[in-house]
Structures are given as C-alpha cells and as structure tokens.
Length: 327
Image (cartoon, rainbow, N blue to C red; front, side, top):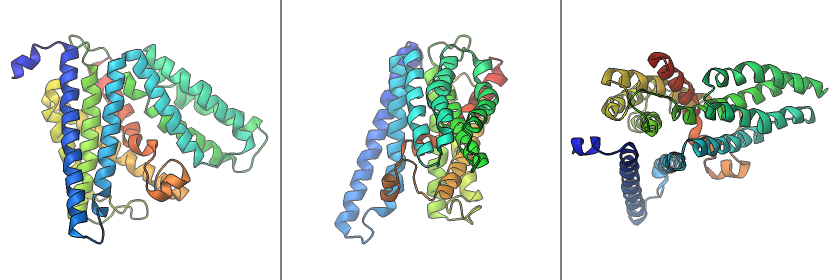
C-alpha cells in the first residue's frame, strides 16, 4: 500500500489525502448526529448541550479543510487570493468589535485596501524577506501617523494598539499560510499542500485533545478570568497529542520524525497560546464569539474564531521551517 502511494504523482497523493480527510470528517459528522439523536431520545434535560463544543470543532475542521482544498485545487495564485479574502473578513470582524473614531478612517482605509493587498502580493511574489517585516516595521509606524493626522487624540493609544493588533493577527499571521505553499524544498515540489495539512492537523488535534482532557479531568485554570478551560495538565496533553500526530505525519512532509516532532510542538504551543490570547481579547470586548453581536449572543462562531489559533501558529511555524532548512 505504501509503495503504491509513493508511486502516485504529487497531485494524486494530495488528492488521496483530501479524500481521506473528507471521509474522516463525514464519519465524525455521522457519529455526532447519532449521538445527538440518542440524547434527544433519552429526554436529557440538557439535550445535546454537552456536544455543542464538539459540533463547533467539527464545523471549524470542515471549514478549514474546504478552504485548504480550494486553495490547493485553484493553484498557488488563487490560494493566495483566497486567503487574502479570509484575512479581509477576519479583519472586518475584529474591527467591528473594536471602537474607532472619525480620525481613524484614513488608517482603516489604508489597512483594508492597501496594507492587506500589498502583504499578499509580497507573498505571491515570494518576497519573503520583505513580507516578514512589511507590517511589523513599516505599517506599524505609518498607521499611528495617519491617525494622528486625523486630529483626534481621545483614546489615541488604545485605538492605535487595537488597529495594529488586528492587522498583526488577521493579516500578518494568516498570510503565512499561503506562504507555506510557496516554499521551495529540493526534490519535494508539488507537495506543499501536505505542509499546510500538517500544520492545520497538529494544531487542531492539540486544541481538541486539550478540550477533551479538561472536560473529563478538569484541572486548575491557569487564568480563570480569561479561560476556565485552560489548565496546564490538559494543555500538556494537547501538546503531547499534537506532537505524536506530527511524528505519524512525518512521512508526508520533508521532515524526519525528530524534526516533525519539534515542528509540531512549535506549532501547537504557538496555536494554543494564541487561542488563549484571543480569548482574552474577547473577554475585554465582552463577547463570547467574534463576528456580529447577534452571533455572539447566539453562540455562533465567527470566521476569526475558526482561524485564530492558525493566525498565531502559521508565522511561527513558517519561520521555524524556513530558518531550519535555510529556505
């Protein structure tokens, strides 16, 4: 079986990978539906409330898989454009919950219609050295200048910091996902979709195991006012699961097993701690979920809720891979 897979072309291997993932997600969806129907039949007063988080995680997995499949199927250029749109809507969600004033309008226009497209153009053109410093250096210095020229000093520091933070997470962080598909490994061309799959799977597995362990064996919350579910024991269990999966997936990556373990742990640490940071931002804004206020009230996750861990994991993972392999 392994020799048969190895004899397939790069496109056929990636196709087989996505067919496998879609099959697993379909099976998981069927199991979740069956569990929900059984609980309703048992007349449980909670209905299927305890399965709510599992449904959210499953929806996130479907969303990410579909995005990655379209990105691979449409090609490198279209993938970069696709993720640019994802960044646009994620940034819009972030800014919707971050109060701005009239003096910020020019900075907002620059962020959405100049910074974002330029950042993704730099990715598509493979100007990796420039795209890694464009936002943290040039944009961070320019945006406050535009806000200052708006002649509105009220809450200036807070407003500038929120805008910079939103661009950093929603644009800078997420732009590293399509950048992974453009890295050049000698003798490994056409298989960069596996690298993106590796990143997404280990981070999602880490988050899922962390949730399940904390649910069945609750630990002492590290930051209870930020997250009641983040405990060191469940976090370490999530890291262990993500690292183990990374080793198992090393065969579809350019990594040796030890390298895959290290890269998986790096991605899981960045993604899980980034998710905690985004929870802190939501607590500060007084919402449960990103997106419209109505969606937060109903518990419907926004786009940013689906990609927040990836926004933190992708740049750390990208630069770790690029540095280690000298790409």
